[in-house]
Image 1 (cartoon, each protein chain N blue to C red):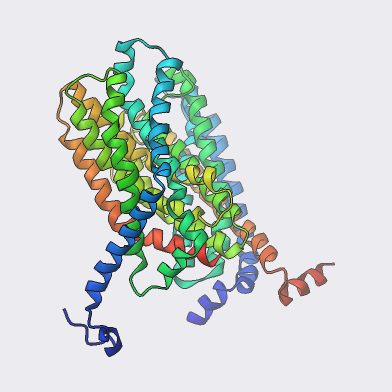
Image 2 (cartoon, rainbow over the protein chains, first blue to last red):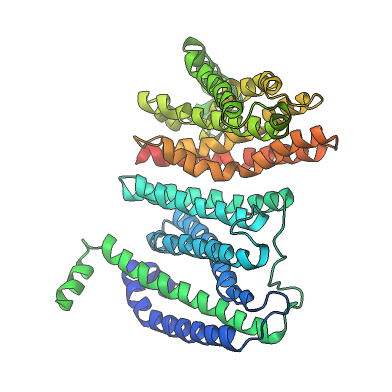
Length: 246
Length: 243
């Protein structure tokens, strides 16, 4: 049991394991996002208030979910890296950061586009837009800090510390901005209460959310594999692999 | 409190370990304060910056007293925040350059506490003077009477949090040759809650509503950051010194 985890946490073991795993997540992402897009955009009923413009939700909400989840995942990876010195965790965090920043940007952009028909403006200083924008800056800070160090190990550890500091701050920022001023509609999904939307509307949304998460896992696996190859390029197993492939 | 596991050597100098921590704290603070007193220009710079930025707003927006009075709380807070941010870069830089930080790292006393001493000095020489100077600039922005005490109190309380959180960023970037811009990128997002409740307190005082909630939240932010930040500062200093 422990031997399995030990092998998995080594870059070489993970490289072999993820090769078998990632196609499944790519396939799941393609099927789920494909089904969700067709169902959500073509078959789900139009909103009685917002008409067809509400369909942006099928991109906006999953992207916003991922934007927050990826930062938490990065902080967990940073913790694992700092406490147990598992290099693989840092490689995963490196691989995740650009996707997280991208998802935050997608959430902001789709929110702005959605704001035009519903609020009549591209930008509103409301609580969730503002905290999303700050999250975007946090992502940029982590990526920039990692790149600013000459030594890779220092950059990794500095980025890990900053991610953990950031993850403690995210809820504080979120609540302080919420108390500051708010206009945004309340959260769409809640685990504890029944959704306010009809089933035909939120089922495709659920499928899209699952599809985005599969996409995230697939991208992270694939990108981590290339980070592994890059960082371990001096190791014998990587050179043997390169020799085999040509 | 006796510590049986400690080796007899640590008592050889006839001093309890706890006492030596307090001594080291005081010595660090005294040394840093002295270093600043001998070169007072650095501390004055952020005050001058604060006054200058405040001067720019009436010129850039409008000299109309009524308009200025409505935006004064936010202006004063943002300018003070930026002034505190500018001074962050120098918090550890000289000590990094001349090897003092390495000595702190090697010392027997816990690094988080020693870092906290440096943060305290930073607040005493930056945050507190900024807070005390703010009323003068408030008069120039025709800040409504009755909010001056709250302005000073909220700035004094909030700038302490700014120093504590900012020290993490300063420690992370101290080893980088051009850390200044990066430092503001790292630290400014984390400053948002302090700005919200700090400026909110002054606005509440102007509106005549209770300021207790805002000040209590500022105090809570300070308490939380005082608990967590020293460990992050210490870890960041270790990264910067070993890199």
